Image (tube, rainbow, N blue to C red; front, side, top):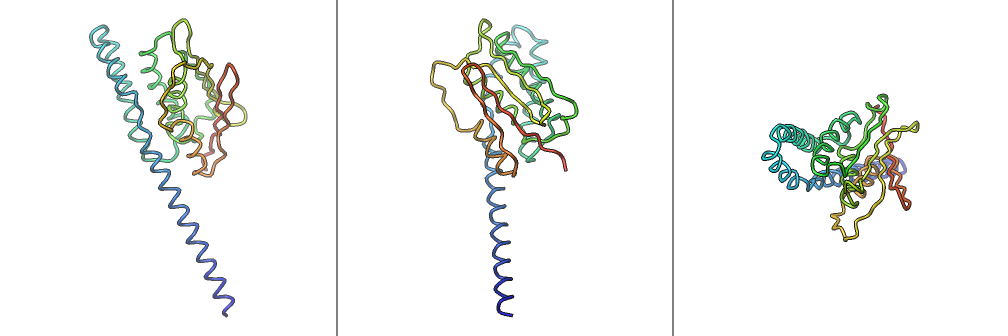
Length: 211
């Protein structure tokens, strides 16, 4: 009887430990979500102000895309995972804002197999990776930044960009790649693979099957 009681206590202790760890991980994940606050709003509003004066029809479209972006940003805090299809819809609006600002200096191509659009990933993952590429690389019409987003046969979403690092030191707030890696770990998923050589930077994100 005493042995059984000790065993029951150990099992109860283990359950409590697991529950505590799960709660702690969830708290960390919620904290990460709150940190995702893109700093491009100021630049976007400046671009909108210029467009209102120079090209009102384009300004109207820009404002519509900006509204789409921020609706998605607000909703993203309500969920741990989203479909790739929803993330791609968002990134189309987000890249429209970037292209309005950078023009011919920014080239973005997307080739995603429709079968993968129902797969899952943490929300804003694509936005963070695109933002990371834009933040750290030179973007000029004569020296364009090219970003490619595509899926492969291993059920991975691959994001690549050519490397042309800015000479000036860029302030980093510690989000971006670390945020993405931490989210995958907390969700118990295989972490993304980061590859870099002299000319290219690449991230391979495991897409999560819907259960």
